[in-house]
Length: 256
Image 1 (cartoon, rainbow, N blue to C red):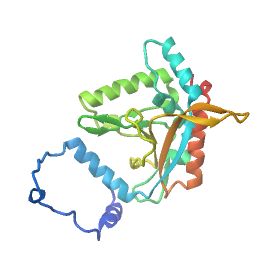
Image 2 (cartoon, rainbow, N blue to C red; image 1 turned 180 degrees about the horizontal axis):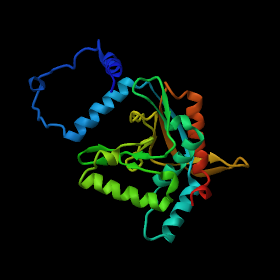
Image 3 (tube, rainbow, N blue to C red; image 1 turned 90 degrees about the vertical axis):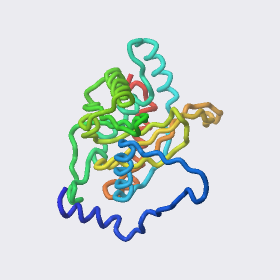
Image 4 (cartoon, rainbow, N blue to C red; image 1 turned 120 degrees about the horizontal axis):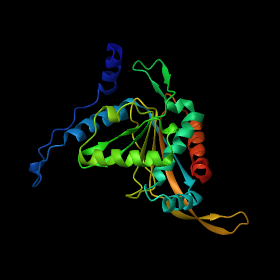
C-alpha cells in the first residue's frame, strides 16, 4: 500500500466522532464475550469497505422454474454429487462477467487505474462457527457444474471444520452471498474489496404471474441483489448485468 493510498483511507474516517464508550452494567445485568479472531478481522474489512466504497444495490429477480426442474433431474441422474441452485448461479455469473468485463475488474490502490482480469475466480460467502469466510473457486469458466459442486462442498466443509488459509480466500474476481437457506426477500451485501461487485441471493418464492394468454401461472422466482462500486459501475450497467444473469438462469440448456 502506498503512502498516498494510506492518506486516502485515513481521510475517509477523519472527522467522525469516536465510538461511544458506555458502561452498560449501569442499566442492568450484562455478559461480555470476546469476538473471535475471524469476526474481528472480517468486521474490520467490512467496515473499511462500507466506508471506502460508494455502494449502490440493484434489486431484481430471476424465473428459475425450468431451471429447478432440470437441476432436480440432473441430481436424480448423478448420484455422486449434489447440484444446488448456487452452482448454476456461479456459471451464470461467469458468463455475465465475460459479457460485462467492467464487473471483472478492480481499481488499483491509488484509484487511478482499472485492472481488467482475464480469469474467472468466484468467491462464495460461507457461514461458519468462527465467522464469515469466503473461499474462492478458481477458473470457474473451465470447470463443469459437477466439478464446481464438488469443489465448493469440500471448501465449505473445510471452512466450517478447520478454517481456510489466506491463499484459499484470495484472488477472487466477484463474490456471491447466498442466504436462501435462511429466508429473506433481499438485502444489501457489502462489496469484498478490491472487487467491484457482489451478488446477494435470498430464498426463491412461488409467485403468481401472468401467462401468455392472460391466465395466472405459478412460477419459482429467485430474488437477486447486486451491490456495486459506483465509481466503476453505473446503474444502467448494473441493471443489464442482473438482467443477463436472470436470462441465463431462465434457460437450463446453458448449463445442463
